[in-house]
Length: 416
Image (tube, rainbow, N blue to C red; front, side):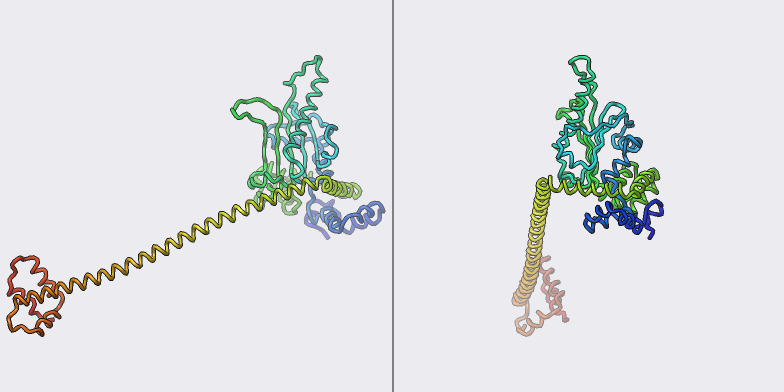
């Protein structure tokens, strides 16, 4: 069955061909049978193009980025990362001063001297928990010490020309980011160097660049590659087929790098050796650094729980505030209703008092002004007149201190 990647890389072999070769070679079959079923499946998937290859496998990375064979590749990546033109003039062997057990955590470690005399150490880490800043500083110090020793060897006197010691760059690619980088969810290139708190400048030589590729992948999800440095980080971090196809389509210079990898995959002895070494490193690191790794996991879990507790506390405060505001709004509404009801009652009482005052006024007035034969029934009839008539009488009395009694009587005698 032809896979999608085989259309771009014809050298990719089929699963049937690979299994036939493995079964026909006792040493290969023995190695293959030592792997767990899921490891066997993973191996066959990337060899046949069902999935992409993880470029950061030590054997693949060193072959593709080998500065002795194809220095232009590493030069290009370093130039983009350092923001200056980089030319590799030599490749240095790994320093024997590193502690043996600690060096095993390095999946890849390439040290090169560039044209201006600076040293660059490019390293790949599986897990940031196994590579704290303190250890990184020690590795950087090793590079400075190597320069110092070389300067002393080349010196004709006991005095070392410290100006001849150039900056050292420690560049670390993390497959799984350290916990202190996780809080910076939109940043995937972290640059460190020593600086004064006063602003005074002094060249202290040690510089660090940390690249958490898992955070980079999250930032690039469903996004287009917009620059060549991001293209390199895609190359290092993805085994997704669609990502690989987009990469070699938009940046064709990466296709020869994949050609190199898939030609390695044609050699079963070499590619199985690379995969076995990868599994061995993972197993060794799991045993040697399990306590440190577990502590990192515990620290991360603790941080997550603390963050969750803070968020829960904040949510509780917000809910409590909302409840208070609702209660206050309900109380204010109830108070407004009570005030409105009170206003209605007061208005009704005022109206009644006003009506009573008018009635009393009319009664009193008729007691003083009406003829003697004006009966109680007549008073009652007069009080049931149109209210506007009574209002006119009221206004007349208040506007004229000595009202015309005949005029008032004429008003009051009007019928509805």
